[in-house]
Image (tube, rainbow, N blue to C red):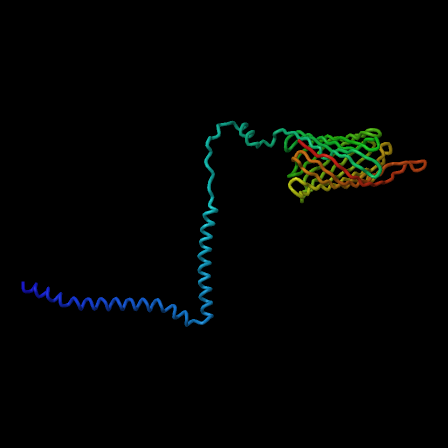
Length: 315
């Protein structure tokens, strides 16, 4: 009992001392925090301008690095692949033939195409004329029957030809052709055996070349090249050159040996649809024909420039 009373009185007497110590410790901690907070400001004031610039650059670098990391994270999220939804209805079982038809994977499928490359009216130096160049084929990607026809009517006379080829693909973008050619119109008709190649040369030049062997030892060679320059998706500029050579004169048809005729054309077409396109253009033509020169016929070369307008279509 006497011990408990002593402890109680001792606590009451020491309480003011503890309060004073607690107040002094609080003041010391407050002073320490104030000194720590004011130290950077003081150091900043004491720094030189160069040190200010270095600190600003370091701060900017840290901010840029943080922004870059945020940008990379955002890009990763944006570029993350999202798979499409699974099909709602599974494809029904089908045979190999049905699968080939549905997926259009049959390289031997028989197809047909008709193309009227040029069908035009021309105004030359002296008269109007009409011309055409058409082809049609039926078959597969590797083997097909190819028909070609081209001609011109001028001064009431027609000069035309039709060709029939067996066309076979022997390389990527290239076919060889074996067949017949028949010339008709003014003068007697002529028949030729024909062999040629057709394809797409480097830089997207379309090439046609053929050699012909006729009766009486006549031979001929023809080559055509064209290029399509897309000014827009529908407006297309098409330069074209065609040359025909003959080894013998054929006076009855007005054909001279050597370079019998040549044509250089430039046509601008507008594709209303891919299959239907009107065009205008300029064509330079050269011909060597047999004409009366006194008492005999001599090959005379003549050239003229024509303005043309026509139609190109296919289906």
